[in-house]
Image 1 (cartoon, one colour):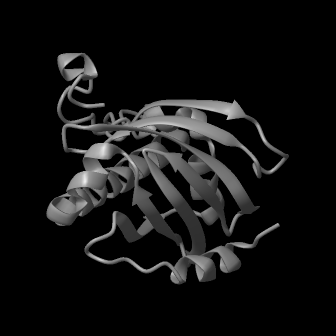
Image 2 (image 1 turned 120 degrees about the horizontal axis):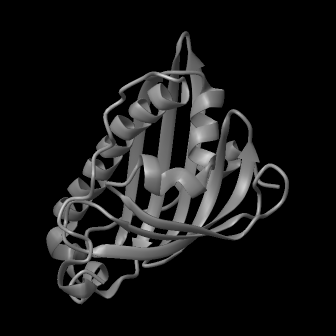
Length: 197
């Protein structure tokens, strides 16, 4: 089984040029929580569309995988603030509770994602290393022109993720009257998804 550290090292070898459809995103969240709490929320993929609905429109587990999650196959329908959606899957390739897990993505984009969690006093520092190549024809064709806009779309999605995670932590701890998480921008069924898909 591949470790989280090995996956991060493998990801470091990926080169991105302006002419390619490859993207490298490194996001760090700092939340007042234990790493165990954050890990459990993120591994609970069946609830993603409930607590992070700005991005996750539909999530289905296709294969359960082994105890601990390795081998789990998940199908997703996602979007950001731009008016297009993505259909993709991921398979969990490594899991090391509560330090992190990694996944392999395929579909409208392909690549790897590695979540790493470190406790910093009463805070969890969650780092996501996401290295993908756009395969959706619209993204692949326009990356050379719109790379910065597509990158900003990802950054928006991760900001909404942090906001939603903080709300979900409050809910799971039993706090009353927690506001709902941010909703998706642009109706995801706009023109029956003819433009968006």
